[in-house]
Image (cartoon, rainbow, N blue to C red):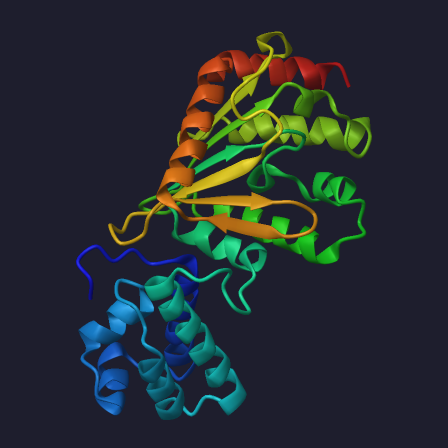
Length: 280
C-alpha cells in the first residue's frame, strides 16, 4: 500500500460492498479470510478502505462468497476503474452515484459543515418541509433527504456523535416553504436542534451584504481515519457530485469559514430564527 494512500469515495463504496457481502453470509473476518486465503487484517483494511481493493481480490471474494456473477462483475469493474483513476487520473467513477452514496458518508463522518443558500440543511428538515420544497415530484430525492435526516439523528447518541456546523442566509428563514404552518414547524424544529451541544446553527443576516460562498451551496465532510481526506459534496436537482481534489476542498473550507465569520453568533442566530417563527 502506498504510504500516502487516500481512499476515494468510490474505493470506500467498494469496501462497504465487500463488508456487506461478508455480513450477509454471517462470516467473521477470520472465517472469511480463511476461506479466501487473506489475513483478517487485509480483509478488514479492504472493507474499511484503508488499502485499495484490487480487482482480482474483489473477484476472489465474489467467488468464495458465491455472489451472483453479474453482481461481483459490476464491483470488479468499479475496482478496475478506481485503480485506473489512481494510476492514470481518469474521469468520473463508473456506475457510481454520489447522491445515492452521500448518506453513507454522513454515517461515517465526524464533522459536517453545511452551507445552504435557499433551504434549511437536509439533516434538519422535517418531512413536510422536504415534501413542499421538492414539490412532491421527486420521490427519490425526497427519500434521500429523509435518509440524511435519519442518519444525523441516529448519530446523536453515539459515543462519537456527528458534529454539524450549519451556515445559511437569513433568506432561508423568510422563504415560506409549504405555507405558514409547515414553515413555522420547521423553524421551531431548527431552534430545537440548535440546542444540541454537537450542533452549531449560524445565520448570515440580510445586512451583511455579499459573503464568500454566496450562491454556491455545499457540504464538507470530515472523517476520523487518516486515509480518508475531507470531501466536498455538491447537489442540484439534476445530480450530486463529490469534490475530492485537496486544493478545491480547501477552497470550500475557506469559503465556509469566511461565511461563518460574517454570520451572527449562535445565540443571535437563534433569536433571529425565533423572530421569523413568531411572524408566521
